[in-house]
Image 1 (cartoon, one colour):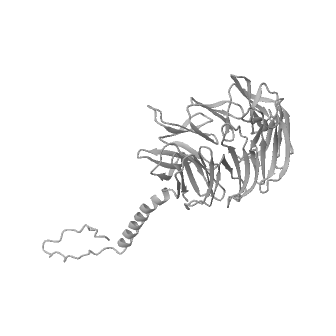
Image 2 (spheres, rainbow, N blue to C red):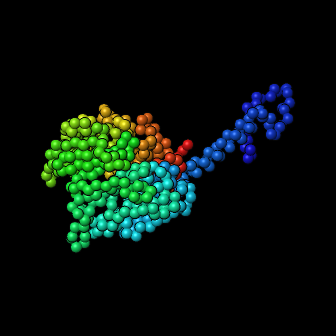
Image 3 (cartoon, helix red, strand yellow):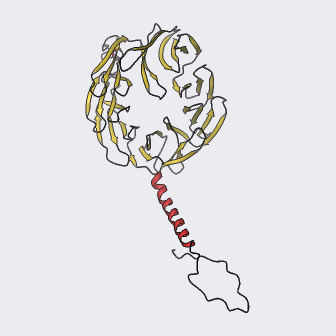
Length: 439
């Protein structure tokens, strides 16, 4: 018992009765000693387990590093240097990488879809004057890093379970002497993810906007082409066969197109200072609504978002109505909840808010916390501690509850975080940290 003294509340003895003989240790109830030992053991184990649970299981100190998890929790780290890049695969909890591949003249970006044994790598030309002349796409074995195939002069458009769709934007690349490389057209080509063999290809005009359609699970599931004359074609990425075709009544030059929720959202430019967002019904091709501004991205399943250093806006996808207009640096829309955060700018401190986009009502506020990242199942908040560290928390957007799941005592600056299946990781100025998720 470590010398602890337990006092019992004994009554005073009768005056005519001699005091009872002293007994040490005093007689205790039989249940008390096991209960005290159990409580002390639980406290000791709890105190020892908290740092182990909160502290990272993998730390890498290189800055300019990005992190992505595969479906089997393999962590892929890409580190960017001045004119080169590096791709590494780690198992969380092991300090040494499974493999490392260096890219002397490029910056790698991995795509982790479907088979965890395959990784598709887009390699961007690191020469700022090369205009992407050395862009390439590679297929690699995710367990060894071994190169399976490569295609130069390509960008990734869609990575599916079996097929990768590439785009050759040859007319966009300019040689150092000013001569145009390639022809005034672009080639769309689908290749087998394991062998790199061509499955189908076609050539489209260089001015045609080529994008993807986002499915309900957040992954692209179709190739979308919009020509300057308004011809819209949506095709199957595995076969190239058309799924739907329409002629849209464009009012300006198409700069981008997004397809979701039965709508084609086209960002157009009528003049240098006149941007327009128009929503067209996919079933009829008829215009549904328009805004005199350019919404930059889908956010969630039912909303469009745009953000500038001054403010951000969220619009309802079906009707185009503005649901939020205000400050915001980082944001997420999950269902009808907006999670928006802004940095500390004196005299205002940084904070994160959760708002109901249907009513505009503010539901929760978290002073000092910033939105750090999310996946389809969870939302992450981070906080820089006063002593020079980082606290990471998981937020339940529906209830507003959050719990701390990770910490690091040597961290500076903003954290960008992602979740795997059993792990969560953050990147920033101090490199990469990975923690196990609570079970």
